[in-house]
Length: 82
Image: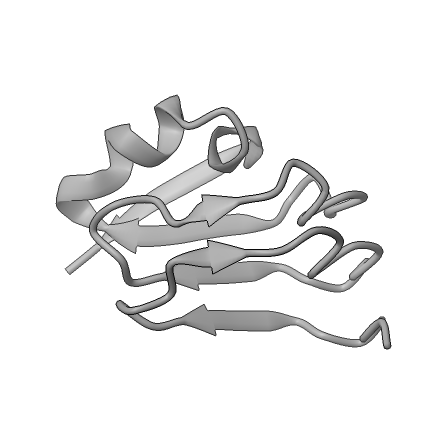
């Protein structure tokens, strides 16, 4: 099932993998929070058709790791949180 009205996703510290098409076509998704210090494994199709203004929030000391990641780095905005 695709959740077209999903706006925010919070992924806990223990999330290790995000599967194919997990958030595909979530046109209203504006905020993704990933609390893991290391970027979880993620399939390239997990965030297909993500809105261009969606923001990824990650631990402040992990921003560069997420930016360098081939999938997570696709977010136009990656911000650190304490």
